[in-house]
Figure: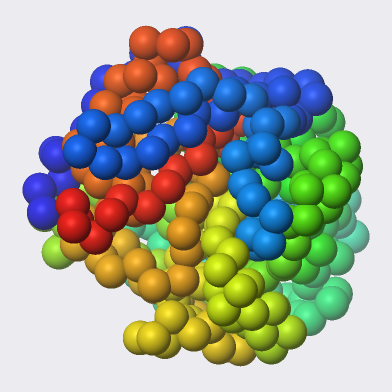
Length: 365
């Protein structure tokens, strides 16, 4: 499909730079597809009323690591500033990263993170890495001087919160982001971007969900920085997704299969959760225990088998996430939904408001 079909104009002042407080006070646009789509303006706190007893809510429990590293290229006496955003672990001592400016680095060169060209940190706080491979689009493979838990500790010590470019380009991260850019479900370290639909949940909301008879289940998909990359090709068939590592435990698969057998709906919190569930579902709709990498790219025409409804934020123009929601609820429906959200003053992107999307009937797909 043509990429420009997923374009729209968004005024800069509609990009949320901070989340609302409390988190469940964010707005929630309910989208019900059909020949005449219906939209309803609600709040995230209303979510239990929009679900039924016996439904299952599935969240992503990945934890964001401080994946943005500042450093210098080590080459003789000359120092050049380097910024790296880790996006996929490739071994105990290796990470793939997006680097700026990548043209300053060559295979075999060394980068010292924890130092900058303007101010040199104590060497005891530095973290060295060697460039062992260069890919496309500023991607490099870094081999670090530490490995395993020691490397994890070093990254925690010197790394920064990897805020999305549309926030980081308008303000610096601060102490509040360490908590704001982390869901309450965060448990498994490895993501370099937050599963942002999960940012809206609070203990109060979870209590109401439980009281309503809705079950809660956790899966893990470590979100990569590739989620920030725009789709630059003119046709979606030419776009390459970056693989992300995920896990669906056997107990979760069994519980969700039982939900479906009993007539309940499976509601995914976030596109990451949906992509993982649709990656592991069989043709007959049965979910399987699974661990591994998925590079599933969902565009209109995709046949959904696992998920009945999706809670998600509002996404960037021409993004793979906007393509996914257009596949789920219908391209025309989502165009109308985004016009509605713009007309009604909804806040967009990671710290913005949310939507609850129901799946388009197959007769309209």
